[in-house]
Image: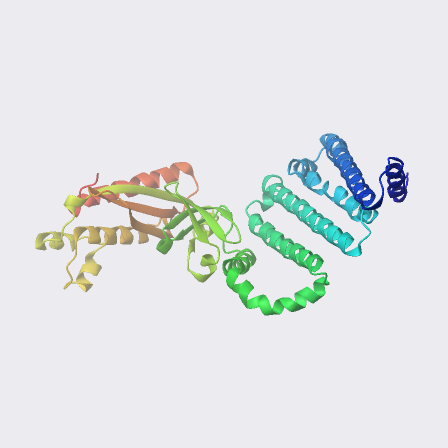
Length: 385
């Protein structure tokens, strides 16, 4: 049956029941709204309960996993909201005769339609993120999350512009021209997002860091594996299993060290922490300095700084540094630092990259290094705990 005939049929039916005048018009509008609502319920049922289930059944018979992910992320479910909105938009003029009223309802339908499309795109992008991370393993180390967020922001802005064009009944081009006056406000509000957006592109293009890299940023107490890179934050898991979030743009504006570059050339890492009894830390006596001047790793340093007063811990760290520099088993990059510790001990951590990739050789180097370090501590009158 042609829907255009429906108002006439309802009007004749109500007249036969004895209604007339203004009441007849109001009842006719209510009846048409009820019928349109019921048709929308039927359309929603057909799309969600039947059409989408048919799509799901077809997907289960395919060999690829990509369409399964699209179904799991409810891409088709989100797009199913489009059909009721289209029906209401095309049939609302059958209910009302006032052009302004029709325009208001059609504007609401367009806003709903834009929202439904945006949610569909958002679900599709979430599915693409999952596909890249779990299916296309060769791209799993790229900051996919960041690029997906960038695309989401772009589509959000496009959707917002179209919504505003519907609300103010202006073309999108006219609105974009007028946005120039709000540029300063937008930059101020979205400063971190804009900086993160630019930083994400720089990090990716220059291959400065990727997911899975081991980086260290001493002034931010960051030293660990990069778990995720988004527009606004970088998620890092420190060596002590704590999680740290830093702004993405800080990786471009500040300095950081990426240890993975060295490790990717068949080199492996050694990391170990040990405690020093705080009660054994003291300034060096004349006798202790005399003995330490005979140590080949400290002789030149002490001769050049003969007038300076040193603690035994300070000289011990200098000894460790020089020892690692002259050890052929250790690659050029290493760190020696003090960690947060209790009042009874000072926790020292040594992180180094070795010129070996065989497990047995790495274990041997590890044992030999720390045997030397622990034995040398006695020479500095320090107590290892």
